[in-house]
Amino acid sequence: MDSATQIDSFFESAPPLKDSSKITDKLNQFIHFDSPSSGRRVVCVTSGGTTVPLEQRCVRYIDNFSSGHRGAASTEYFIKAGYKVIFLYRRGTFQPYCSSLPEDPLLECFELADDSDFQVRRSHSEAVKGAVTNHHAAVAGGLLLKLPFTSIFEYLQMLRIIALSMRSLERHAMFYLAAAVSDFYVPWKSMAEHKIQSASGPLDMRLMQVPKMLSVLRTEWTPMAFCISFKLETDSKILLEKANTALKKYKMHSVVANELLTRKEEVTVVTETGNISVCRDKTRPESEVEDPLVELLVKRHSTYIKDAST
Ligand code: PAZ
Image (cartoon, rainbow, N blue to C red; front, side, top):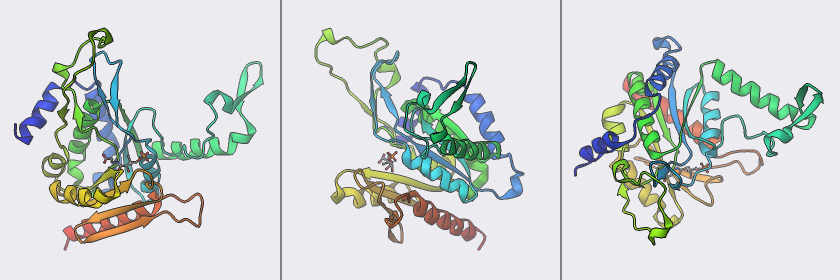
C-alpha cells in the first residue's frame, strides 16, 4: 500500500469524530476573529500523548509518554509573543497558566467561608487569581482556543481539520508539533468490540503502522505553513541523526530534538543550515527552556514570512 492509500484508509476506517462540525465552526470563528487582513499569526501547538485503544468499548489502551508540560508552557510564550494559539491537547495533561497552581487536590484549595459559601484558601489565593486572570484574558481576548483529544483517531482527525482551517493564513500559520504521537495502532475494523478476555490465554495482537501525516500536512493540508516537529529519543547517540532524517523526509522547517531525561534543560533545534542548542537559563530557578525556544522559532518564522515578500 502506498502512503496516500494508507492515509486514506486510516481516515476512512477511523471512528467518526464527535462534533466535527462544531469544531470546524469554533476554529473558523477563532482564526477569523480579527479582520483577515490583520496579519495576526496563528500557531497550532499539539501537546500530550495519544492513546491506542485495544477494544472498541475501550477498557485497555497503549499510551505514549508526554505530560503536556512542553505544550502548555510554549502556549503561554507564543501568546506573549503576539500569536493566537490553537492548543490541541490530551485530556488530563498540563494546561497553560496552571504551572503556578498548588499541587494539592482541588478540594483542598478551598475552605468554607460560612454555611453556604466557600473561598480559595489565603495561601493559594495569589496563584489562583493569577492563573484565572491570565487564562481568562487569553480566552476572552481571542488568543487561545483549547481542543482536547484522547485517542490517535481523534488526534489525527482534529489535526487535519485544524490544518485545513489554517490553510488560508498561508505563511502566517505555524505548527508546533510537541505531542507524542503513537507509531502503531489497531485498525478500528479489526479491533475487538468488547473487553478482551484473559481466559483466552496470552494476547497475540498485530499493530499496524500509523501512516506518517507530517508529509501530507506539509504538501497538501497547509503547504505554506511554518512547520516544527519534535523528536524524542532516550539514546543520545541516535537523536540528532533521527531528527535530521525527519527534517529532510517530511520537509520540516526545523525539528526540535530532545532526550527524555534532559528535555526540560536543553533541546537542539535541527535546521537545514545547522543545529542550534537551546538551554534553560540555569541562573534562574524558575526559567524554562520553552522561553528561549519559542523566541528562536518566532524569529525564524518572521524571517520565513519576510522571505515571501522579497
Ligand atoms: O510533554 P512533556 O513536556 O512531558 O514532554 C515533551 C515531549 C518530550 C513529549 C516533546 O518535547 C516531544 O519530543 N514530542 C515528540 C515526541 C516524539 O514523538 O518523538
